[in-house]
Length: 282
Image 1 (spheres, rainbow, N blue to C red):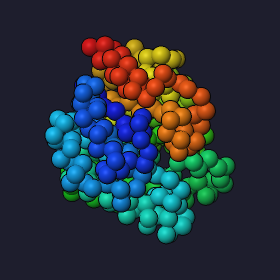
Image 2 (image 1 turned 120 degrees about the vertical axis):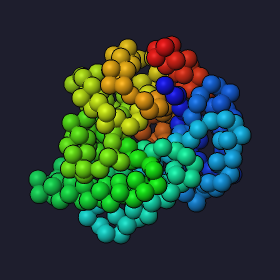
Image 3 (image 1 turned 90 degrees about the horizontal axis):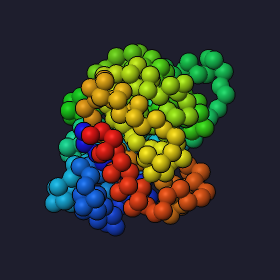
Image 4 (image 1 turned 45 degrees about the horizontal axis):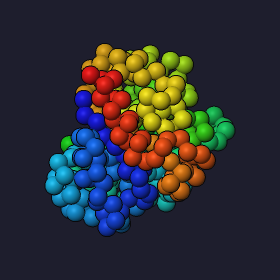
């Protein structure tokens, strides 16, 4: 099992000019991977990032940030095209950085909870299927997979649970398309997180380890023992990445509604979380 830390723990938006220190930081903490949340590709010098990671001895994962203007299933052609341009960059960058996948809720946009008509929802779903078919095929050419993330009901009205994700995977019909599961979202939405992991099985491409309050893994209500056992039962071979947030990163704190301290500090989320996960999976 490889363990990673997401750049959102410390910085947003990620910039290679200011934040390459994170490669050494996570390496010194004992992580295998740095997951880079890319909000603005213009801030990322891919060659510099690749060198910094190689010098630090850590691998890289590309994590997409899908705001309202990057909605692959939007009825607005310009918005869809913008999402496609961004996803193309993410795929090509993942290949350059030797990231095995691009993670994130790429089927739609974060912050889109709406009660649509049945017809509008079907049309939106069809656009998501079409978009993922196109970019799944593109990703295959680069040896990259796309791991899309079900989100809680307050962040999307589209894919909230594993079953919906499996329905989407079946309709897309590409071996390059799979699930990015996040224990925070699963804790809110699944009837049984452990059963849902087993249901997802080999379709799980990526996992985010996040406590129910988005604090340090192992300090809250997530059934971590069940999660670890289920991932082992389905022979999950991907990474387990800590993604968490604190009020220190104000832009992200506002976006995910973090109004209070949920951990002693940012480093504690990563270090204490990693210590717990290594013991758990051992």
